Image 1 (cartoon, helix red, strand yellow):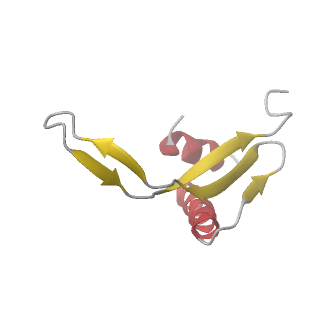
Image 2 (tube, rainbow, N blue to C red; image 1 turned 180 degrees about the vertical axis):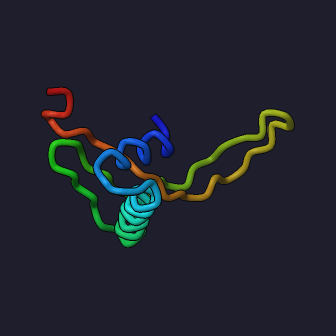
Length: 86
């Protein structure tokens, strides 16, 4: 399922496709803003999203064998709710 499929599903509930697209865009925008702000996004019966920062680590270039430092990165983790598959 992709974004277009989600919009099509929302169109069945909302009156127009434009409204469905705007609603989905707004939902993603609010979720991104919350996660970037360090908040946790919890959707009951579905799961939760939370952001975290990976630590810096050493890596190497496989072509040259050169050792390099990999910078910390922001990532998102999803944890499904207990009744996700019920």
